[in-house]
Image (cartoon, rainbow over all chains, first blue to last red; front, top):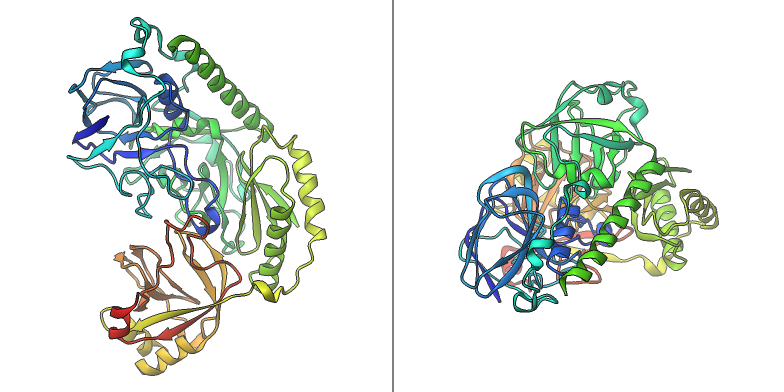
Length: 315
Length: 225
């Protein structure tokens, strides 16, 4: 089966769960910014949670499928496609995801997953490196993407399946245009005053897959300790450059950074950050590392239950 | 030695306080140890200038204390030594000046040299890779002769072609990919420093490598395979 891109939307890329293992060569882990939505979309169509799916931001694509297809849209709400549920599209049918109704990033999974080459252990697009995904770039009008045969096929699906298969709002992340994001302390947290936790920060326009730039009260380093030696950073790391306006590093961030690290957004709250648009606000709240781990394991447990539950219902 | 969390998925072990060969040996020794005898639940071991980051799966490490204790136990056991067998010297051919190095004239002028002397100085030195990162395959090289320490451009270029050889303050390096950049561009290499199709070693250079630049002509650049 093939999917044709009729209009590409903004920054529509093939993404999966990233390519760990190559940070030492300077390669970002990458992958879907909202990994929870990407995984749920895949599970809904009977794929492995980390299969290659589409990610798009603010303006989604218009797409056409050559055969009957099973799809699921998770994350932000786009177009008039029902989200967080299994949807059947007829051969030749078009779907329009252009208008973003909530959130920022949508994830569209197709039963079978996109058939793109695995590069350095991942199928996601590394835009800066120009490799992975579909020809190492964002999708353009006229692109044809092959879809692998799915474990679940439109014609073998129980006729009533689509009605039952959706993900209840209770288990979705608490998406909001002004979320409280939980963080653990960064190495240089002690060098800053408490402002970081007391104030709201606004998402700046020039935010992207590398990082969210925040505007708020200027964060001043108390001690004049001079420049730091660059060391590893990771998605979620919140750096404070000399201008005092923090940057939250995201999926495609550089591997090494030399700015002070005030905090790190915890893994389970990265989806909340991924769904923020320019102009939205965020507040930070400190939690203990043990709590971050507990939440992370609970999130994995949720996904495991979802996988089991869906597997039982779909076939 | 300090061990600090990098979010909820990694610990960073600081094995030295300043950049240099000692730090490089300490870092490499710890990386080798953690690769030979992997700790349970660790996913990725990543060296930097003075630190080693250990990425882990919290479900599989048997608790943070266990991982921390194991790391503490591993660090003192690793004795930095100069393991000559793993030291490589990589020659990077560079076509200096002209369109490939639009800032060479300016760099030479600021250094009080003529262009040929500046090229001879840059290509006569021996450099060492102290870290790879920032961008895919990007090497941080130490060893730039002091005369060539020229500040970055006031306004960064929006696009620096892949292979560009530049100077930024006390550093010199090669841009593996076309990216924005603020370094003074003095030449270009036909070598690819980042090869995503090479699954085992996508980056041409790795920490510890010695690097030399070898001047080549425009014709040699064009003919380079």
